[in-house]
Image (cartoon, rainbow, N blue to C red; front, side, top):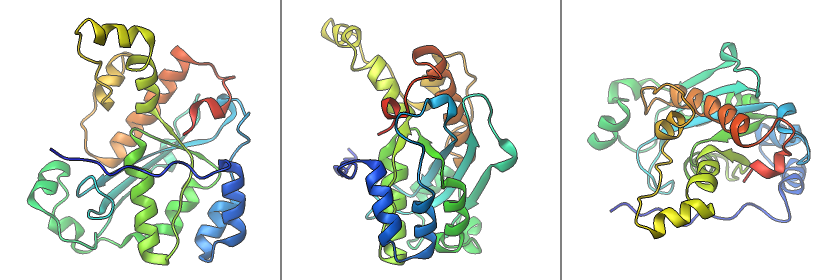
Length: 241
């Protein structure tokens, strides 16, 4: 059975202070520019927040022993998905691919042979993320993997708040009183995987394990979640982690 390492809690006292502090102290100019862009105030209505959905394909689940092989990003708002600004990178990992990881994400040795290292596209990636709220489905992959990979290359990491669509589904379908009662009477918990979550909102299934497609699927899922369970006026702080 695969066991995930415990992840660090978000920096204290809060994300705005953390981002401002890192903007003043980051040594790498790419990180300094990213942190200086900041984020909307935590009280900003989610309907006014610029966002970017991000997904990664990795060679495993442990950021200390596995690596990123692709990243997809899709900028969006509650009312619009900006496909013209989507980006997708296949990356050359510092560790060899295993047959298991190739089977999982279908990125082969030939695909990565001439692919760039993360450091070569880091400026482009951070430019897309800067000033936007990052949205992921399962924050224990994208945030720790990017932090560890950047730290390995430049000696300092990159942490940031995220809206986790999986966590939002868990609040409703696993942590609510109704969900707890259903478990108490022996009913299995609802699946909060990406396509299973999308199905609850009538969203179509997409082929999984492609970073760009999964990023698009995550953006659409958040739009549906806010429409059904929240409101465009919901403060950003209610949703981020």
